[in-house]
Length: 214
Image 1 (cartoon, rainbow, N blue to C red):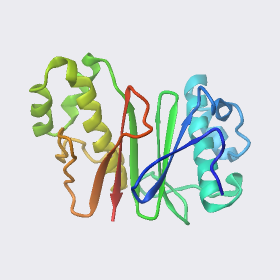
Image 2 (image 1 turned 45 degrees about the vertical axis):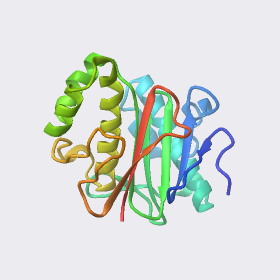
Image 3 (image 1 turned 30 degrees about the horizontal axis):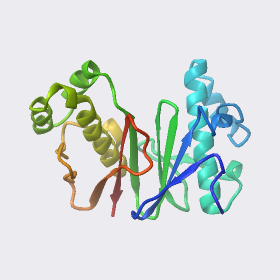
Image 4 (image 1 turned 30 degrees about the vertical axis):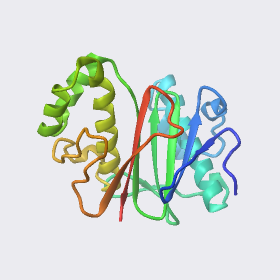
């Protein structure tokens, strides 16, 4: 079943479907139409302020429609449960979802998968947040020219979050424990996890990565 016409399926040679939605443009309807959500999901969104609630709702609506197309099922009828680590799951496939400002990116795969999409931050934000990374990664970032820091930091952070999501720990595991690196190719700290940068179809000003736990 094809994905919703307001979503974009990104080209990839990786063993996954990648679906991007711009919730401030063609997929703006996902911020208003919550008809596929459960009552529990709607109540959860009400715990946030209006903007955060709309952002969370849009992400969950996009996710349900992507899963519905992939599984050829009614998006509203798919049971999304949380595992012991708090990661959302369904019984019939593996998936990961990430939000960055107006964008939602979903990966659906046969293997456990983690995906992360990040907007490039201001230099001061990157300089502070990089203290959360592995000591070797911090040293590599500190050696870069100042105008390269923010983009390089966010590339490492996206790799790190994708890796942690693939492990099903998320940020419950210290992001500074594992060295992935700032180089052109990520170094996976786990023999069963492959990490890849995503480029094609990712808008300028953002960085994305995906990891598979085989």
